[in-house]
Length: 209
View 1 (cartoon, one colour):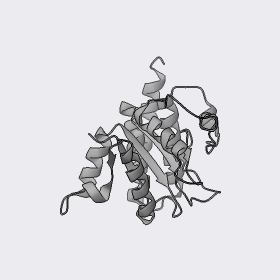
View 2 (cartoon, helix red, strand yellow):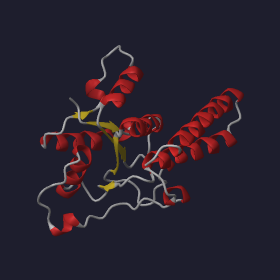
View 3 (cartoon, helix red, strand yellow):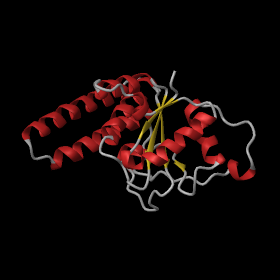
View 4 (cartoon, helix red, strand yellow):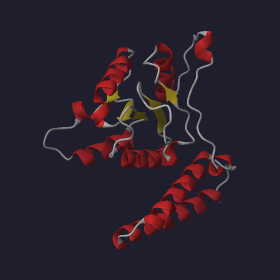
């Protein structure tokens, strides 16, 4: 069974392959599109199936930034995070810019910073995030890693459980997109999703933590 899904920009494929190789050397089974998508098959259906069943997803951001397919993949992963506690691990690859615009949905997750290189420390933290097992022996530097601080927003300071915070952030994003959408069909779809998000938030708020 695969342990982690790689959401990435195809322009950064050499770095993605190297990271997958290093994880697999440590016994982690990585799902990588170029190796697992069946020729002639429906790749969208296969991606949905993987995201719905895999226990962890690494969102990789490298020199080329966020790829066009990473956004819908991220949204699907966030839904699975809420529904079944899928682990989402944002990772900055070597060469990623120092100043980076962090997607709204990713701001509450702890990042792994590999911009200085794919190190043993960084790999140990990534395996920890994937498997939920903290390394038993760490050096002093590994106990105090330097990660990208998640920007604090009003929604991340609000009280509530993680599922509520995710849905509030999703609602804010959808409302932002609805405000700038011009095509009637797009606006209607966004309004439908906004109504669903509001209903989900109301449902979560009525539940005890």
